Image 1: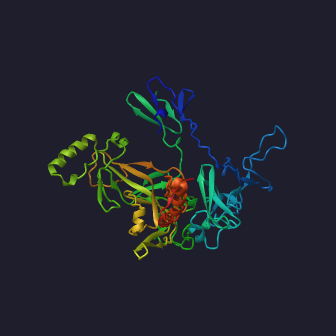
Image 2: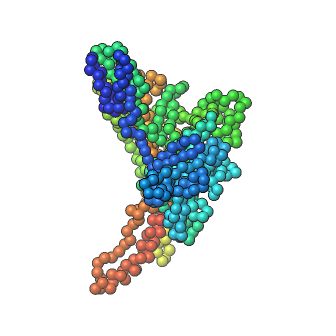
Image 3: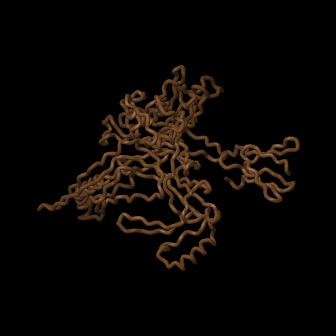
Length: 210
Length: 350
């Protein structure tokens, strides 16, 4: 606890310190913690759920902004498409959450799906919702243990792709969704193709915070 | 001044002559991954704010009847990491930290052993020597009235001296201090190497045979409570060259330490109970990624052997380096080979 937030109240001398809010109600004074000391941590990839849709604070991978496909199938950068008319404001991209795309244990991941080029350089990235990180289609494998035991070294997926989880959504006992954040920073990705050959179709993919 | 009300987040303490209003801890703190919340329930336990390793959940090992206390006798319960069986009440099960959201499932870690933080420790170094170290603790606890640490080798001193020392220690305070460490165990392949050196007539030759030890079949990322974290000695290149050291098939990372401060005048034989006060100390505040050293950092590459003294007016310079290049290649191959025997994970945050 911050010592500055302490408030010493002596006889007839009351004042509110940092983090303390004083409210006078009739002849009573109510002291509350303001809860607004600027300690709310806003960071890249931060997810806000609203019903069955999600918006995110903009994050980047190798300085490339991922795209989001909205419920109408329109693909736009996660911070929003450029407005068509001059003077209009950007509208933040909204990602629909597929409530069926959770595994049997009520888990679903929002991942940044990266696509690499001929020399394993990053070409593009997109935010996707999957119920398994390391399967080609993002669906859980037949044996759930396989999903659990996959050591997440982020192996490349067919088509020179990979997925990196940025948060986990988990359904609680009444169907509400809790989001656990995994990534807090913009990312850098490096691909290490097997054998060191760019022609190799398999690689170990690494993600680092910037 | 009697009519001072307190709203949420405010604690009022009355002492003669004045009131002290303080902000409750917690409201303004960042709720980071791996954050501990200690509580007493038939022994000290910790709830841990879910953190992730390589984007995966982390589990704790619990006794089934503690993980699922409200489950009725014939009710079928499935867990993330044991989806096909209903565990018996006394069976150990792996429970993911995020699984506490699931109906009838609780996820917490029981503290199973305590280290007396006032006593020194002894450990075995990689060289095989036994090393002793005096106990130390953060100065914060001295202000709370914790006793001074016991001086090293105290048990060997005469009893009379001990009495004197006990008197001196109590001048610092009369509370005891114990601790337990929470570590992340990450399973992976282990490795060992056998080295054969032969000296055929044409020169010496070194053969390195690597053996990979399979990882355990259990879920790889788990938090465990141990008395005191002592780093596993790391194999040096020389150790690997000798083929002496087998590297374990797991890597440990210290996540946090739970300190416990006793009431005043606590006898030396007791262990922390509900009268003791917990103080968590965190060492990791972010989710983690980890990998072994297949991706070597640029700084780890040895510089090739070169001759930069001009020879024969510069003509011999290139010739000498050309002759040295097979040596450099061999040197690099040896380094690569030895480094690849280390499966130890290196961690970074997300």
